[in-house]
Amino acid sequence: MIRRDRGGACKTDWGWGFEMKKLVFALGAVTAMTGAVSAADLTARPYVKAPAPIAAPSWTGFYVFGGGGGGLWNADSELYSTGSGFFGPIAGPAGTPRDRDRRLGGSGWFGTVGAGYDWQFSNWVAGVFADGQFGDIRGSLNDTFWGNNGSEKLRTSYAAGARLGYLVAPNVLSYVNAGYTGSEWSGTTQIGLQPGSAAFDTTPSFHRDGWFVGGGVENNLSIFGITAPGWFMKSEYRSAYYDRVALPETLTPAFGTGLTGIGMTFKPWVQTVSTSLVYRFNDKGVAAVDVAPRIYSKAPSAVGGPNWTGFYAFGGGGGGLWAADSTVLSTVPGFFGAGPAGSLIEGNSRFGGSGWFATVGAGYDWQVAGKWVAGLFGDGQFGDIRGSLIDTFWGTEGTEKLRTSYAAGARLGYLVAPNVLSYVNAGYSGSEWSGANLSILGVVVGNTSYSTNPSFRRDGWFVGGGVENSLSLFGLATPGWFMKTEYRAAYYDRITLPQTCTAEGAASIFGCGTGAGTSTGTAVTFKPWVQTISTSIVYRFNSDGAVVAKY
Image 1 (tube, rainbow, N blue to C red):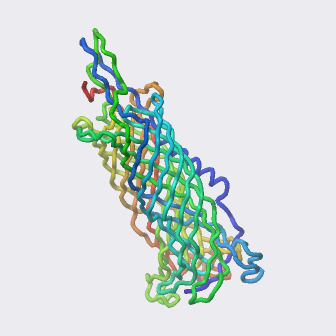
Image 2 (cartoon, one colour):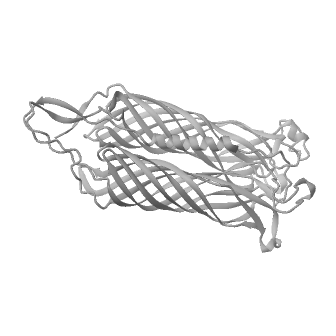
């Protein structure tokens, strides 16, 4: 392990503006989960009998659920001194910041269980619920002062809140929710990033309280014409926010006793998507939409819905997080005793980013076998999902941005109602990333540009899913117009980014090379996973009321 003093800058913070951006993102995602569909259109022909009642579930009563999902966390983190005058007058009293915020990241999976009670009021449903998530969403807690890294895990979270939904079809509930959330996080054992380093210090486990906002879609479980009374399925997005915590570092017995003189702060934002099976104890499939028996001179012959076959175009926006695994390699043979060029000199850390984007695209669908829809599409996302790229050997950090991504793929969906399509999709994804201008993280030598790495592109693949419905609110129909909400996870291969000295870096007290444009002796690898959620307005060019289900 190498102990390196980190030069520095005045502390910056993501600040209040960033908090507001996170809230806007979450509310935008919630809005995206809450579409509305038009009622079925009835085409008349000569007939003398009234149609049979349309069966619908009862939404009032108790329910339980269980399922699973995945998520990412981003956490702002900075170092602070735990002792007065640590490293002399440069640190000041205990609690003095040692560097500015950087963005760490984590990713993983979880299981969830919960219960609730709903009340149905006409087309509205309101309820209360509680649930827990149990799993392993893990990332890095990184100390660039001592050159150490530990694995930080979100092990458990739990929530209690309320939800409000609208029945966009008798069997489909679109809802928003919000409330309290608690979380339990692991402690870490901090190990030097150089291969073979011993455990140097530990940080304690901790608990954080916070709040969440989210939304989702729930529908009764029926596929291939097989009904399952009482059984439902729901997919839900959730964004949870927790306050900053200070985590002092304690030496391991091999290095002494007491504090290391450094602590780390940790302020996480957790974004999850889950799918669960739901059982409602009092759902008996009651006739919620009843047509009274009387004589018609003309009676409806079919329940109509949009024609899902044809071309469509869409545009919208959303937000997302990325988490990226990163190591440091040597670019010079024998660099600090590392062996040949390309040797690993700093082990894996995980960094994070978050931000916003706009999206446009087009596709073609085929409605097949009655309730199935298959299609092809292409789209692009243009924005700024930014976070940290850190050279942990030199203790430098810069802003890395996902500026553009694009995708081509296929989707397969099932009509859970004539005007509501639930689908999954997958395919190719490409991405364009900015270069980064790295500066020293510490507070000793000022916020000096130290090194740069190039912009780059990555190819990969994605998997996702969503819900699309005809666009109608409170009975106001807009023929041809739809709305879709989509979750997507994209995975890209690792790339190696050489670090090049700037003029300021070469002239600094931690000179990184022989002059501007020369190698720092290191390269940073970067392997990102990007998770996004978006909402788009869709126009279908030939969607006028096809008959899809007969009485």
